[in-house]
Length: 194
Image (cartoon, rainbow, N blue to C red):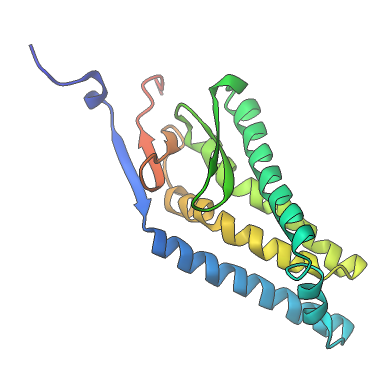
């Protein structure tokens, strides 16, 4: 009788990246985002105080900054949970709610692998939805929301990198977050008969 475990019969692939790479791309993406929008806002409004106004009304008002910043992160995780529940048809009790003390960010993950197609949605859609708040800067001169959206992008880049790494993966596979590294674990779907 073989000692090979049942799980060894299924394809498993770990797609990971380093914390330093994640931080580098997070920094570049958020700086690029904020620079792009401030340049456009300056070209539209011709005001020199746009950047000063943005930082004074966001980071320098620390009590509001912390509140709005965390509300944005929480909203992203709620969007992710809604996608998992409705698209992957996962029950609420199968979601794992965590708060990372190292990054000071909340996270919601499914306890079990879900289809790669749905997993891709959970990585990309939340940040794409939440950064639409940047339009408040354009229509209501609330320039601080460029800063908020840049911070949300910074903390979402780890998910965006994971999306980029698995974007071409066959949608028949199953995916879950990597428990010990940054990235994704892919599994062969044993219920796929196509």
